[in-house]
Amino acid sequence: MLGPPIHFQLGVLLTMSKHGSTHDNAIRPFPRDFLWGTATASYQIEGAASVDGRQPSIWDTYSHTPGAVWNDDNGDVACDHYHRAQEDLELLGGLGVGAYRFSVAWPRVQPDGRGPANAKGLDFYRRLVDGLRERAIEPTLTLYHWDLPQAIEDRGGWCLRDTAERFAEYVNLVARALGSDVERWITLNEPWCSAWQGYGSGLHAPGIRDIGKAVAANHHLLLAHGLSVPVLREAVPSAKLGITLNLGDHRPGSSHELDVAAARRADGNLNRLFLDPIFHGRYPEDMVEHYRDARPGLSVVREGDLELISTPLDFLGVNYYFPSTVVDQSRAREARLAGFYVAPVEQFPDLRVRSLETPGRDKTSMDWEIEASGLTALLVRVRDDYTNLPIYITENGAAFDDYVDPNGRVRDLNRIAYLQEHISAVHDAIDAGVNVQGYFVWSLLDNFEWSFGYSRRFGIVWVDFPTGARLPKESYRWYRDTIASNAVEYAASLNSLTPAP
Ligand code: IFM
Image (cartoon, rainbow, N blue to C red; front, side):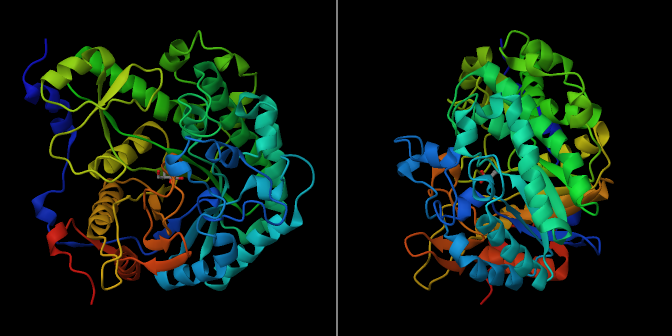
């Protein structure tokens, strides 16, 4: 039996550290060399899907499958960044960022996923890198942000070990072409999404629903990372290398042992399946046990793989968007009776975990709860349990229902409030001794939000998709001023924010 609603909320309330009143309106300076940036990804912005030798990726195939993506949207044109890169470089210059995180499309560089490089594809990224360096913006390059060449998927995709080897070969091509002009290299973006949404829930390309394959993909993605680190070290000795993980802060909805165990499973799948191999050279025992019968599952692990996966890095990239409060599936009904909204669809296909909505919390248009203290808690935990390496927040941001007002402006005050709270939460982590060295807003541009197509706008720059025209939002100006002052005001309330004249 459950207690009253307050029993359910206890786990949440005890761990929430909403900004305290002692800091109200204080200006909080960041360390002098703190790196401010913004991020994008190839398939979400580039368009030019069949230009200059690019061949289809799994996302081209998936988005052209009727019903797979909202409104049957696809990335054929997207923000047409491939043809408008100059304009986007100007936007970056005007923002004053110290770094720009972008990804290279594997099917542009190696259209078939094997063989020599496609020079025209590499030229595009060469021009981009040069344009960044001319503006003193450090390129931060992600080698894989989900656009696997379809030809590789046709041979088995991330379920096959060979894909990890192909990846290292592709990395070598990019590293040799762009070399020391790229400051920071990120091997993979959010391998959890590639493995678990791509092969587990099927909500992402290639749309497969098979837990055994998801586990194998999980391992082969990590192996791809591990195999590419020495390749990068050899090709670009000065490079700073890292991986970007989407990590979460999972709290049990109550102190009931089933809910505590559910939160642990969610944490195991999203966080520890990646952090443990990378930083401790082993898979977490509870997850090994959980996936014991999955086939091929972890039977694909070979001797020496974990040594490779745990090869030392120079930094960790952390993407954070929202916290989660979870209960065991068997207790979802009781949670509902206690007055909670329980999400009908679960983020984890096989964990018997259900997310609760915390009453009174605001949400973004992704339906993600807004709670910045989850970011601080997560960063402290990563430091305590895993590493003191420099951490970059390689993505953080929010989608809202933006619109261009009659004066031709996008007054996205809710996004400003979100960014302000989260940047402040990063400051809290630095105050707590966590080695956070930079922050990248997701995203520079409104773009193709995967299964949500163009229905969700994350940009600090509005994109009019029919024409491709760009319009900086109010948040662009706010972020520019934040970067210029290298400081954030502590949790000012939404109402006190007035747009610049
Ligand atoms: O748009 C995505 C991005 O590609 C990966 N991280 C989360 C973002 C928002 O969903």
